[in-house]
Image: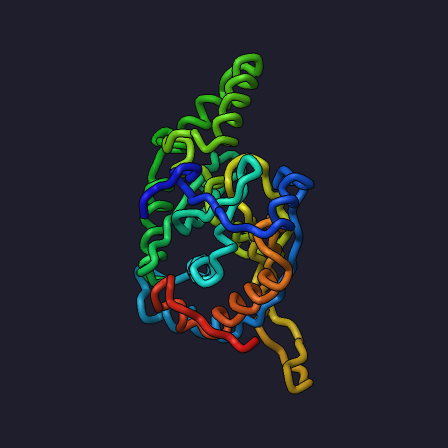
Length: 293
């Protein structure tokens, strides 16, 4: 689609908005003042069975829970497009791509450096395509020598971050000005986690529960989600019966200005439906998912 006046290189300006949403960005002009916290506990018993089965089918390129959760977020973004919306300089934009972001350590040690990783999920991608993209990028990062081969956004951040404060502060101020107007070059945004649909943090991999992480005023990311440890818990099902199941907690922090409460609530139901029916992860990312209201 042709880029129109007012569009950004990473998003199209939303030109039809109701008065409430327009005035909301004047009342709450920055993302940090507009965040809402959501905790969602999901029954992932079917997902656990699915992942264990897939691990036995392909022992070399194993599917992980992070791959599954990432694909679920991607399918959610395609099915609930307002979640892929962002606000910059008091203007609403629909993001051009679905991009998932996370931070990876080069090695599992306290002293190891961290690098930012962005993964673009194309509309035809399945969970297997996304797995391959994640593995390729993470393996490339892990094969580096403690950050000696960092490039792109990570290299720029590293260079600026090592400058003396009196030089670094005005440079960062100028970068924030360019960020506000959408003028940052791709070298600053390509692997910048703050330029993504959602920032994901798999705390369950560390054996701990989900937390709430603040959104930032820098960049365009409207959602930060942490994934807790999968554990057994007794729940009450729809028939009022108690049963022991595998559950996972998600701590989500998002910009409340991008959609309304009903939209967020239905989106959570779609996300839960995907995880309860993990075979959906094998379909195209943009595959339409219908749920009962």
